[in-house]
Image 1 (tube, rainbow, N blue to C red):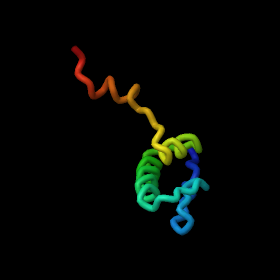
Image 2: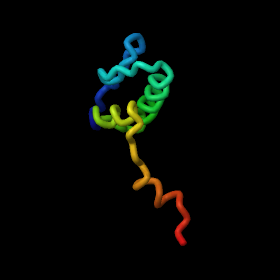
Image 3: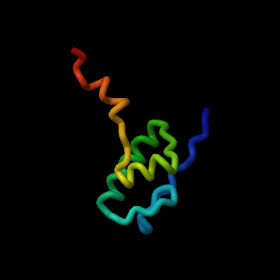
Amino acid sequence: MDKKEKLKIDDQAQTIQGMKISDPDLYKKIRFIMQNNHLEGWQPTEQEINDLVHDETDLSEDYYPIFVEKR
């Protein structure tokens, strides 16, 4: 069985894996995403967390073919 790295979440400091998220609402949203996906086996990288915080994720390549009707 693989060892999963434990998520480091500090609600008082509003940090996830050591990354500070100043906006309380954004912190709660990202914490929810991280916890749920971590349960499914996702081991987030610092870059992935940073992308979520700064809304720089581009999933269009992954999801476009799934949700767009082929003509």
